[in-house]
Image 1 (cartoon, helix red, strand yellow):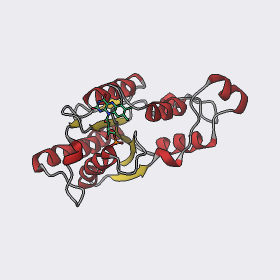
Image 2: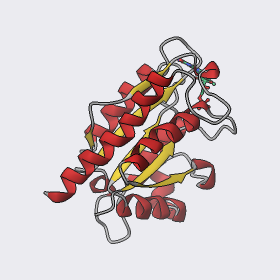
Image 3: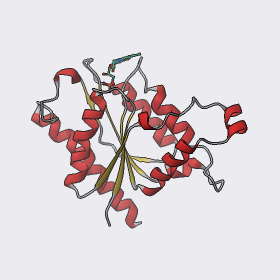
Length: 193
Ligand code: FNR
């Protein structure tokens, strides 16, 4: 069975370091014969979640699309940038919307339940986005995702990438790829159960 991975970055910045890191991790998933779909939240202009908005207008069509994408995948790979010691509002807002009921009324949170997930993070700072990564892991765990123990927080990320998109530090590159590879292996085990 081919494991389908949804790869999502919490930054829509053109030169996002997290997006670059996501791509390195995704190569590890491809090494394990996973299938990776990248999405950019720039393509889903979501309003900030508001209960009154939802009651009045319903769940936006873009959220329905994201829910559909999540339903089709076996694993979730997230690059979570760090803003002021936490994950980005953009990423959390998308997750909050996705967790709302689906068209048939099924809770959106079930889209995360027992799904393999991995988180990486990059920042120009010395610790990378460690706080964001840990915070995002905790959100995903709350939603019932099986967050794999492997993750990677890339410090000094503005100096870390070579022209070809690989990490200059080969050892770090191998570790980041192994996050994607482990994600596939765990998702494969889960899909057998
Ligand atoms: C940051 N940045 C940052 N970095 C960090 O390591 N810890 C932090 O707490 C913060 N806080 C923070 C707040 C705000 C409002 C901004 C705009 C930035 C730096 C941030 O990690 C850096 O800009 C990354 O490059 C953002 O990720 P992308 O867009 O490169 O993926």
